[in-house]
Image 1 (cartoon, rainbow, N blue to C red):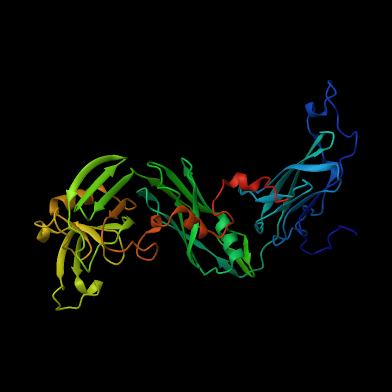
Image 2 (cartoon, rainbow, N blue to C red):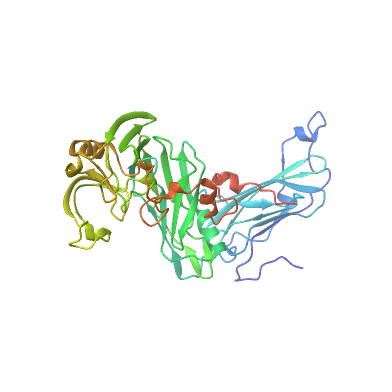
Length: 418
C-alpha cells in the first residue's frame, strides 16, 4: 500500500524505522561496533510527512515510531516543539514501537530524534522535523493561574481556573498534563481537581522556605477534545518566604508562632466557646485587614439575640472566607490565656494582634489543635488543602499515579507494561 499523502489533505505523522542493513555500520579499529560513532540512519528511516505547507501533520493523530525489522529496537526517542515543549511517549515492551501519549500542538514545528540499535550492538541515529496543521476549532480553553506574582508563605497552593468546565476524565488528563509547576528547590507535588473548573497544586509537604515557583501552561494549541482547543495562559512566578507556622492550642488558650523551626513568640488567646468552636486543622492566611466591622448576622446569629454582636475589629488576619480571623479583641483580655469565649475567631490583645499582623503574610500557616470544633473544610472556605493526606490528594489527580514527573522525564522512553 502506498504511503504517499493525498494532495491537499492533513495526514498522520508516522515515523517508520526500517531494518538497519547488515554491514552498514563501520567498526572501530578494535573491531568492537560499540566503539564506533552512531551512523546517520537517514536511508533507514522513512517519514511520510513532507516539509511543504500543503502537507502538514494532523495534530489529532499520535506521533509514532516503528522498527520494522525484528533485529532492530528503538533505544531513544525525543520529540519537542520550537518552544521547547516535550511530547510524552511510551515504548512497547519489545522496543519496536514508540508512540506519543499526549496530543501534539497545532500549528507547531516539531523536531524528533530517534536512536536505534541492532542485535550486533550497532547504533543508528536520525533527526527529523515536521509541521502540524492549524486547528479548525472555534472554542478555546483558557487558564488563569493564582495567586499573582509576589512573595507568599509556605502554605499557599497554586490555583488554576479554567474558562469552562471539563468533566471528561480523558480531557481532564490532557489539561492537567499541560499545567506545569516548576520549583527550585524541586518538590514532590501534584494537581487536585477541586471541581470541573478549578485545580489546586500543592507539594506533598509545605513549600520549602525561600523557594521560587514558576507556573505555566503548555495547553496553547493542544486539542482538549471535540472542537475544544487550549488557549494561551499568562505565566506566574512566585517567591516563598520564611517558613511561618502559628499553632493555636485551644485547650491551653495559646498561640505560638514558629519561624523556620524556631519559636518566636507565645501569645495568650481565646478561641470559640461551646456552640461556636473554632475549627481544627491547617488553615492558610488569606489576607490582612487593618479594620473590619464584624456582625453576628454574617455567621447566622439573629439580630437582637443574646449572642448578637456588632463590633469594630482591628488588626484582623483572615483565615477563612466565612469570617474566621486572628484579631484584636480588647474586650476579652480577661479571658485570654484561660478561657474560650469567642464566636469562633482567635482573639488576643491589641498589641499582640498588631505584632501578629506585622509578622505574617498571605500563605502562612495557622493551625488549630485541641478544639472541640470540627475540621477546617478542605475546599470552598479558604485553603484547607493541607487537611487531606497525600494519598487522598493524589486521588484527585486525573493522571495515573497522581504525581508529576519532570517534563523531560515524561517526554523520554516510558516502557509500557508487558
